[in-house]
Image 1 (cartoon, one colour):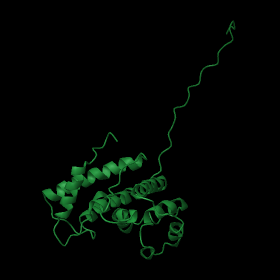
Image 2: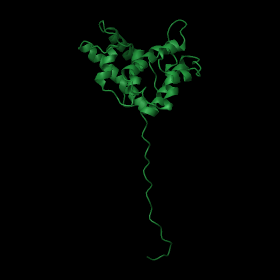
Image 3: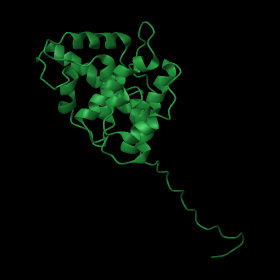
Image 4: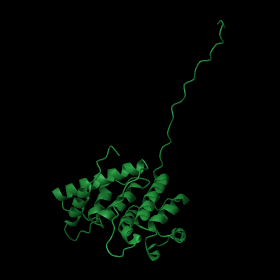
Length: 214
């Protein structure tokens, strides 16, 4: 992705530090939930304006964060990741979601849950994607929401029915692959790529037989 300056590990750590430094009662997303949230925003059929979705980065309820250098730096890093994801999804390129292994006996679902919780937060604040009536969305959404407790999926019988047919990922690498694949499948519905227009082949004038006079 040559047009985007990718965030380094140090940038991600700095972003988490800035989020943690926001004062109470603000409840900011952590970097993993933020990443899922940004993907949920980017996959909306109509892109919400930045002022609306940025508000929920610093606080789940959208309360305003104090203005100043901290907020400016935080939002600049968030917008860089937003642009990075926008380009990857738009071009259907692989990217690394901010999903991190957890210590102890954590399952792949445990590791993925913070990211998918962020995606679900985007669906709550911007429900237009979930309102799209397209059967092509059921399977990729099931791949994302399979890590939730079924009791948390209200009014989602069709989704739960598909989730029941899915095998849990064998490891974290497979879980991450499923997430990226699901995002690209959703993008095919909500952000379809324009067909490539090939230049028309120029027509050649009819050749005269040798010796013909005209």
